[in-house]
Length: 360
Image (cartoon, rainbow, N blue to C red):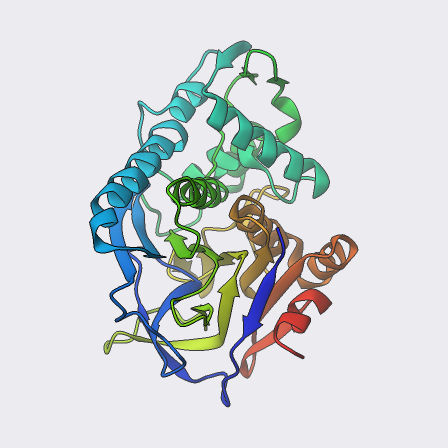
């Protein structure tokens, strides 16, 4: 896929941008109106919304109103199928069935789930374990999964016990029968890749229905294809990583971008955290230590050809940190933007690929 991310310049990057809000926390947001060629009022742009996978989704596409009901049903059906396969919150999901399986057993899973697990394990190998889908026991222990939320960190002994149950190398795959090896106590968590997979699957569905101009958002992950009826790109905002929403429904946009034939994935340390003893413990766990990340990375945004790549890469680059992450990205031609916490507020670091997208 050819990537064409057209920057829309703001005189002041702290400029507030009104957005159509998703149902979940998102580093990225859809733009409803910035006075920048937005055409969400056009009768040709159909706007559909719903909920699935514990969050909200929004699909905008160019088409006639008569097509909306069928597209709505098709999108919801596919998202619900992803949820039924990959949710860690639903005890009856296929992923939960694997997580609950007996030690030293092969578990047959649906093809889609198998392919997502395989992609996650591939990224784990490429990042030396900075990204690890087997982090589930630690996510639950810290209160960021289905287990009750915490208000204080667990003790070191329990962290070490749960960390011993992780390790992507313990998980084996049988590509012929689509089976996954359960070594015992392994709990896979796909929350950082399943939304990206879902976005790409919706894109395939829209294309199959003859819709080639669209913007998809699921849980804050985005993919844009084609353009709006007036030929301008779909507009998205990269939010400033603030801990709470504005009362007036507006957000502070770090950047506003035109998104065409590309996907954006994000990872942030805000909105989902607790504080204890003056320290913030956010939901992003470093699988190499068993603790939430303790770096100054507030958010990471990755641009890629598809969302299944961009989504987990944002998590992996958060764990690697800005120096190792930028080196990793530059070696592989990945476009990434880091927003870092500093004594003066926030500062940015980005790969040459992302700088080129912004025209810098």
